[in-house]
Length: 137
Image 1: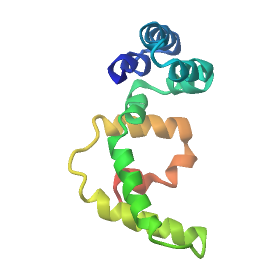
Image 2 (image 1 turned 180 degrees about the vertical axis):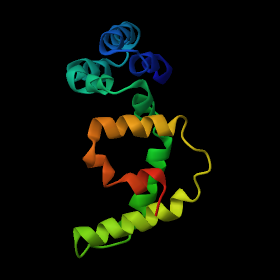
Image 3 (image 1 turned 30 degrees about the vertical axis):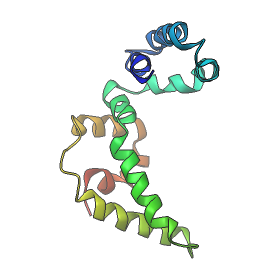
């Protein structure tokens, strides 16, 4: 199923993605009607993904690093009962990131170009997280 969904999110634009989604529906719609219906009903929201460049979309659908990071953050925050402030939570997340980012040995493909495109799209909103994304401390 996952392999047949890949052409949807790897399509070059929203129109091609929708065509691939219809092909996916033809193949899997009878076996997984609720899942396919959910994709079709929410296509307007899901297809905003195509507003981004191919490089940014690749970062979005290549989520293993992101999932690993979320898992590590959940692991650390789960043991805490409550946080005294938002700032204390942010500090804990930053320290956790700093520790587990040392284990990342493979750089993301074309990361410099991707970051440039993110800066163009999000401008100052991204600037605050520059060290986080660039691996600075």
